[in-house]
Image (cartoon, rainbow, N blue to C red):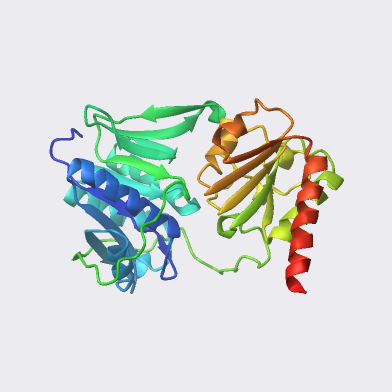
Length: 336
């Protein structure tokens, strides 16, 4: 597919049970920036059943238009009906760019669409933009996260990308903002090879790093359960959560759900305190969007200091207890 007859920036508006995936709002914000450069309209594509009320949220967050396709077979996510519906719409409207959230659902649907539309796909992008020639460029970690690769798909359309959650800042909702609502009929049917038997809610109390405003993250230098207890106590004093880099998780001290970085979670807390974290590219991808970054490391040349707002070159076993005790002292004094 050559690019001349393709125009428009589409965002797949992932939703489940009538709730939009928060990463959709982040991607819409970035799509608006891309639109300012290319002059193309930003369209959210909403598939489901009885989901029209969600269009107002999409307009409020930056969509210029919403294409709505409702069908009973789209009520719950099923790969083949969604693939067929989105393929029909893309073939009719011919967007230049099609963006998905790099969630479990997005990572399932996007490769299927790549095959349907005979185009390319960049996975897990952490930035999007245009080069000096106006070519759409996607930035993604490569070679195990040791480098960042800039990828372009100049000969195929639409140019498709899955975007990591938490790498872009969502726009604040604009009350009363409206746009064009386009209702479309799609020819789909339920997948005869797939049946939803039961939905089980995720147990409460697990790691919710994406919602944490304060994170204390340990790295390779955290060697023992006693070391980890120092981080837990600091997190408790600050009302935060404990996370870790891949080496800490692979040591068995933390579960996989608490891993930050390319192969873990991406977070944007108000504050992250990195404790004995060297700061590899793979790790930084997952936390560099934090509003405030503080780091404690014995090695003053550690890469993590390059993105930190505050840094302490010292042994964390001395520093962390002292910080925790001071926080607890001030908290106790204020409570009297």
